[in-house]
Amino acid sequence: MEDIHSQTHVSIRNLRKTYNNREVLKGIDLNIAKGEFVAIVGKSGCGKSTLLRLLAGLEPKDDGEIIINGTGLAGLNLNSRIMFQDGRLLPWKKVLDNVGIGLKGDWKPRAIEALRNVGLEDRGEDWPSKLSGGQKQRVALARALVHEPNILLLDEPLGALDALTRLEMQDLIEKIWKKVQITSVFVTHDVEEAVALADRIILIEDGDIVLNKSINLPRPRQRSNSAFTNYVEDILRKIMDSSDLRLVVKHK
Amino acid sequence: MKWTNNRLFSQLIPWAIPFLILFIWQFFSIKGIISDRILPAPTEVFSAGWELIGTGELREHISISLWRAIVGFLIGGILGFFLGLFNGLFKISDMLFDTSIQMIRNIPHLALIPLVILWFGIDETSKIFLVALGVLFPVYINTYHGIKSVDKDLIEMGRAYGLKGPALFFSVIFPGALSSILVGVRFSLGVMWLTLIVAETISAHSGIGYMAMNAREFMQMDVIVLSIVLYALFGKLSDMIARYLESKWLRWNA
Image (cartoon, rainbow over all chains, first blue to last red; front, side, top):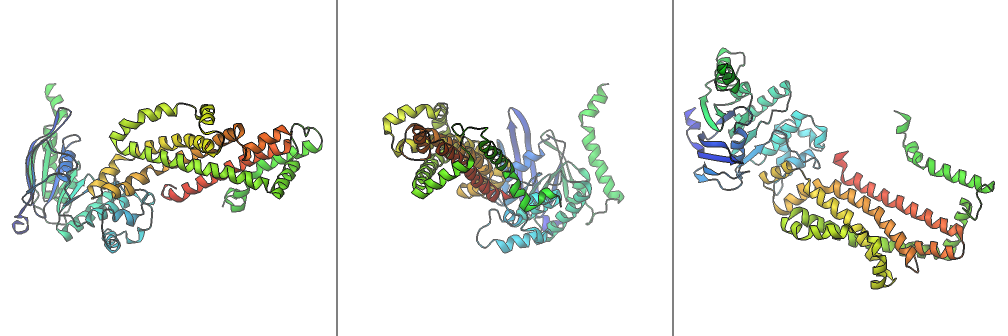
């Protein structure tokens, strides 16, 4: 693991973000190695999506630094591509044209190849409205990867899918990640999904990192495996320990 | 397949009621229930039309009316489109123009007819001016609203995928606003005919509206009714064009 993951790719230092006087990120410090798959978990509103949006450069930071390959990030992060929870395909463009957004030159062969990698090469001429939720996310994944970004940012891309489609998509994401060895940051609220996919899990609570745990399990990971379930339980317990529910019980 | 899906049937059924009315109208006229001084029979209207086609008069009136409608529509539509576009896209333009546009919009443009006659006389300029003014606001409002209501998430996605400037506009903003813009176009086509009819009726020496007014002087009931029927047909025609554009450009929405 050390040989490919030794090189720091993304370095986040004392990152802060405030919305309307509410501090959403309270000085995050995090290093991500080249080719590493990091999952960020936490409850709704903990700041995990904000962290991802700052990494994508979609919003300005208030303080701190995001250093990518030794260079500070200013403005949009064009080395990265982000995949959103709701797909965000353009409904007025055919699937193939959606994949080709932002590409220049002779883009069609590349877009077709990207669609083939997600198993949708025969749907290029369809309108996005004809696709299922899972297919839409596969197109969004193809659209992200066709740019050959250095960093793939995934903002709960499977959150709106049904359980079976989720499993399929998890396999696909893992397969593609293995193939292109891309540095990936995956935001999710599903701990099992995080353990299944990530090299390392970051738990964010109330704008702070409260857990930074490597997952040392061979891939592909067996969910029924006891080591796997132990990881999931550990992290869930950590989340529950600090939850509001627990506080209520304590006060009683 | 349901019988309402039959192609021939679905093309004919919308015309059933107009033809039924024509039939009843003709029937009552023949029976003398409707006096031809109140409403001439359809056949009389038709033969009046035939006669006017023969003398070339009808062609002349129709073409001048169409010309006024199209020129006025283009001027007003293009102005409205670009004003809506700029005010929707750029805050400074919005702050500068929107208040003034809203003030002018609330004046009924037909109320300007006396003023327009004094300014431009009764030649082409006054009709085109009125049509353009009437058409401008529906196109403006719907373009503005369309641009403003483009999904912000899609714009953000476009930016994150390296689109900016014209590429962002043509890939995301304009297609996102298009259905609203076309609603404005369709509405303004109605305003276009309304304005033209009123303007031609009040102040003109050619055009379909003039033909109707002139016929009134000579109690030519058939020609008056012919003019009204012509307006109905042209209204339907422009609506069909607007629908065609919608089905062509908004195919993804089907």
